[in-house]
Structures are given as C-alpha cells and as structure tokens.
Length: 298
Length: 298
Image (tube, rainbow over all chains, first blue to last red; front, side, top):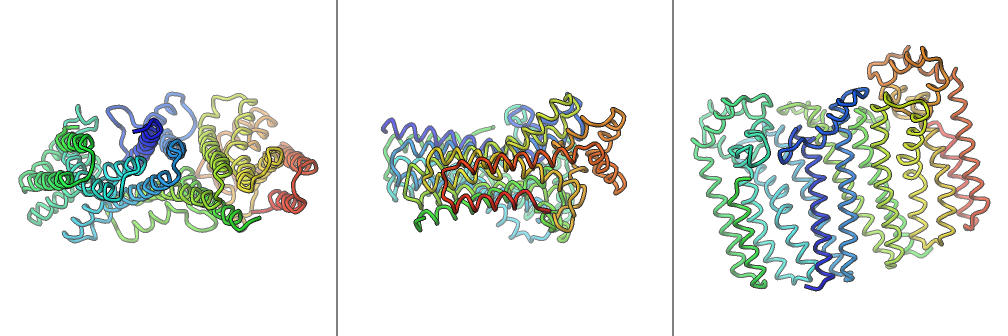
C-alpha cells in the first residue's frame, strides 16, 4: 500500500468512526438510553450540566436538544473528514467510487434505524411471518451492511479493488454482519452489564423487535405470547420480569435457533473467503475478524 | 454562465434546500413546534400516524425518533447532492473551494443553533451585556452567515469569483443576514399567524433569547424585568400574557431600537454593493434581495 492509500484509508476509517459516534448520540436519544459504554450518554451529560447549573427550563429537554445538535455536528464533520480523505488519494475515480459507497451506507443505516424504531411500535399490526421478515430486514440494513460490508467495500474501493474483489467482500461481509447483529441481540438480552457497558435486559425494556423475539413469539403458546408482549418494551421491567422473558426465549428453543443462525452465517462468510481472489494476508485478517465478531461477550 | 456552471449552481442550491429541510425537521423537535409553514411539523405527522394506527408505545416518542432519523437522512442526501453538483462543474479547484464553504456553513449553523438552545436555558447566569452579546452571536452564527452570506459565497465559488468579489459578497451578505434575523425576531413576536404560518407569540412561549428580548430587559425597571422573565418561555402563555410581553417590548423602545438596527445593517449591506466589483445584473439582483429580506411580513 502506498503512503497516500494508507492516509486515505486511515482518514476514511476516522470518518466512519465519527459517523458512528453521531449515530450513537442520536440512537441514545431515540432509545432514551442513559448510558453508553458504561458512561453517561451525551444527552444525559447535557441534562446533568443543565441541572448542575440550575439553568432555566427543563433539563431533559435541553439534553435532548443539545444531543440532536451534537449528532448533526458530528455527521457534518464525518462527511468533511471523508471528503478530505478521498482527496488525499489523488485518484478521482477511486474517490468517487468510495464516496458512492459511503453515501449508500449512510442511507441504508438511517433507513434501517427507522425500520427498527417503526417495528418497536408497528409490530402489533404484523403476523408472525411479517415480524420475522421485518426483524431480518432491520438486521441487514441497520447492521450487517453498515457494520461490516460497507466499511470493507469502502476500503477496497480506496485501494483500487477489482469488481470481483468487491463482490467477494460483499459475499463475506454481509453474512458476517448478520451474524454480528444476531450475536448483539443475544448480548442485549443475556449479556453481562459489567462487560457490555449497558444495563442487563436493556433491549427488553426498549422493546426491540429482534429476530430472537420474533422466533420466540412463533415458538410459544398464544397465552405465553400474550404475557411476553405485555412485558416486552415496558421500561419499568424488574429483575424477575427480565428473568421471565429470558426464560421464555431460552425454553422455547429460540436462543438455540439464533445460535444456529449465527453459525450458518459464519460458515457462509468463511466459504466466501475460500473462493475470494484476495491477498493471503487480507484473507487471514478477515478470518480473524470473523472470530472476533461472533465469539465475544461485549 | 456556462450550462455546466448553471447545473452546478442549481444542484448546490438544491443541496442547501435539503440541508435546510433537515435543520427545520430537527429544529421543530428541539422547539417542540407542532406546525411548520402552516402544516403539521414532521414529528407531529409521525406521532399522528402512530396514534391513527394504534401502534404500541408512546406516539410522541415515536414522532421524535422518526423525525431525528428523517433529519439525518436529509442531511446525508443534502451532502450527496452537493457532492454531485460540484463534480458536474468539472473544475476541481472551484469544487474544493465550494465544498469548504459548505462545510464551514454546516458547522457554523449547528453551533449557532446550540448557542440559541443554550441561551434559552443559561440566560439566568448572564448579566445584561452578556445577554446582548450572546443574542448577537446567535444572530450571526445561526442565521446571518447561514441564510445569506454562505449561500452567496458558495455560488460565487462555483462561478469562479475572485477573492475581492467573495469579500464584497461577505461585506454585503453578513449585515443583510443580521437584518434578516432581526426582522424574523420581530415577526416571531408580532407577526400575523395567517401570514407567517407559525402561531402568534410562539417565540415568546419558546423563550427565545433574542436581541429584542435582551434590549427590552436592559430598558425596563427591575420589577418589570422580573415579571417579563417569569412569563417568557412559559409554553402555556395565554393571549393576555402575550399582549403584556409585546407591550413591554414596544413601550420600552426596544422594538424601535431593533428597527433602527435593521436599517443600519441594510445601509451597510447596500454600501458594500456600492463599492463591489460585481456585474451590474448581480448588483441589481442583490439590491432586490435586500428589499425582499427586510420588508416582509412572513
């Protein structure tokens, strides 16, 4: 890799980090999450500042407003950084290709986020199959493309990857991204708060309509399903109720099915690497990524 | 102007419109405004949709979340459109210059918005002079640069304007932008709802700490000031209370002072045109803009 290419990749990766920071700041507002990575979330910090100073008006409202604007600022800066990075490259064609991928990624993840938020509310209108389809769509758009596939493609475009190489990276990245999110869904319900940095059972209090939830609902009796729906999404869930929901997920066999889905997607990702015309070092690095993404507890 | 330049300017102008739409969607969330241009605001529409479908959870929360994401989507699309537009031009140097101005504009207006939101709360800690300085800073960053100066500079950069021409457009645009916002502040308090599309007195219920407010407070007795502070920012203000606040602003002479400030800034803007080395058609168009921006009732 030339120095220019390296600078461009580091710049683009930094831009993705800033974009992600923006998404998290807005996400925490949307989910009313008070913590992020074990620390107070951005809107919480602004609200605390308001309260500490005894400013006029509503502290929570100020926190939300300031966090919306902080996210907007970070979105702009991410874009600025990305633009500078692809200019560093001095190759207009590669720069355009990377920019298009970046644009698509932003649209995909924002639409995916909306679908996620929508399903937290609109699930009441869906039948079992629609619920599962919707949950899968959220996984693909909100997470799989965004977290793994798009960053790989952007890097490849900056490095002048061939069309076949980009296709191989998609064939690897998309299933790995799905596996990543399915693991995340399990951690959101069963994860250890001390390791994940998020209170245990937070996804249950938010009422996220994950694949895990859709599979559980399709596997339990209608009376258990009613009790399940009643509890899921209640922000006041106590420990006992969290344990009850966790139990239903485990006992129904849904957890096991999700674990199997993860394995299947990982196999797909690995199989894509077997046939990929990528440098051996690249393939070795991607195999390491597979292990890190799917066997984790945070 | 060549066809390419024209396409680039139209594309960039469309990008600014989309950026503005994003800012308004987020702004209405921040200000809890239920209407925009006489129609329900975006978050209100999403909340209504939630209520109409009897979806699960909280309609208002869904409205806020969806509007945050809609704004994010529009921010991304605005950027995408701007990028395409400057590429149309086929002139890398002009494209870079326009992009830098666009980047600065985004940061300025977002920071200005934050200062505005901050002052709605933090004013309790400020003395009279600080309040006036803060209100002026908001006018410059949130509005003057954003609404007038930056769009002019971006257009000029796309057209290959000289440094002297860009300076002349700044010297014209910044004071005109200040006059524009001061007029907006007056309309926010005294405007006719049927014409502005915003409920009358809305700025008073939001508690916007405008130059008009700062000047009023510095001109009234401390007992009137206390009553004024008590009412301003109360979302439940009734008509009588709105009339009382309007009366204090008028009787104190603050309204007249703002009108004088507007005239002074317009004179400055016009004087900048007298010396500008711009085409006569451009100068004529800018003089028309001056009249449209400052003598308006919506």
